[in-house]
Image 1 (tube, each protein chain N blue to C red):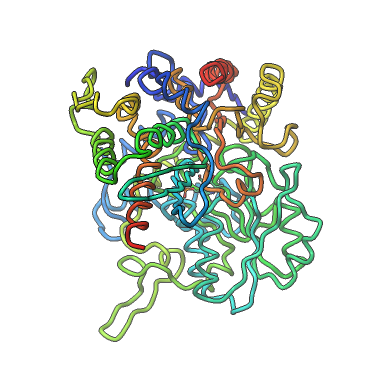
Image 2 (image 1 turned 120 degrees about the horizontal axis):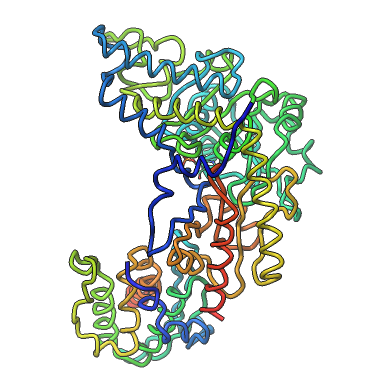
Length: 155
Length: 411
Ligand SMILES: Cc1ncc(COP(=O)(O)O)c(C=O)c1O
């Protein structure tokens, strides 16, 4: 099993202690979407404001473990102001990052050199994949974002 | 005379000899599942190596042996819980959850009318809640809850009203979150005074003290083998004979019939009627060995040991961490078992458990399948440490050290 530092990187602890983009947005114009992780009771509520093909603003509330809340905070920072295309690309890259492949779970195997640089601070979450139970925690905000975007675009 | 020595039990449990992350295993999750002693594992091995056959079918020697083993386990269960009607009152299931589903689908569906009430408590495991809601949805019964007070015990101040017109009161022997033990004899009297039957969820209580259905006036009792040093895959529903006889079968198939024709079937008599298909034979053998092992320790001695561990842990958690670690459950050890649900300041239970794991300490984070109770106390989750017959104060030492690391990391 990987050492604990792989999971609790300093950036993650920082985003957990001081989450970014906390708060709410008026609905409408913003779209509100909730996500739950029934396993550990993690909750995330996102407020998404779409304008001119961009995710113009994002705010969030929620409670849960450090991984779920830090991942939400890091996500907000990564996708705010981006075009929907860019947001979807980030979503896809993050999904890849959280995918367990056989070799990644092998003793001593390093995470794949998946274009981590393009992920910026999000790369701090790469270690989560070595703790498979926690992947759901890290994915919560992202799955909620995907759901919110598809709901908002079908309105 | 019991010659119970927790250290000797520890030596008997193979899993407690392994290391995790370079530390000796500190197993504090017995409320989820207990660790089996070698005697249980060897009994199952011996069964598969020498006696395995299907039961109640063949007439050759090993089939007779397997049948004798399986029925012997049933007799042992009856003795263990002091069933007044003996083995004929013991139904083998898969686990506590299946036992409650059998009770709701069979007794509930046949003996309740729309508008009848089944009363449970706010501290029940979902296994003793969801089947009753399902019965509500299919048969129109009402499900009522006895609340839990701020002292983490059942609040019986309005119980007369809650029990009025109830058909069944179904209560856990011990809360898997709070550690609270309920006074089963008193609750049985209350239920019976209101014309209701009394069911007990014994999942958390059977391995941590004595269980006596006759003494306490219990009508139905459900429990799981894997929470009493036995294997997974076997559980029990015990019911008073007169009640069992009025219950229709739930699962249909082989083994549960007296006759099958092209126009229908006749169910078997006795407990066979509730055991469709090939039963968990090896698991019943393992459960039998677990019962013998527990009887050898002495249920009262185990209860006293776990009470002392709990008293010591409550005291040391308080003196070490004060308000930074809150115990969600009674703070005295009267009517309380060895389950410690912890709320650690500023650290989510999942993170607590993750840090503890790195020190070889197994605790369980989550809602513990008791969401009504968690909601009652405004919590999404706790980190739960729980003791078993093999637990020692050095397990508490490791817990306290690990909690210190968790607090330091997230401070
Ligand atoms: C009080 C209580 N009831 C029922 C259960 C369910 O047991 P099983 O999962 O073996 O069916 C548990 C186990 O967590 C429990 O603690």
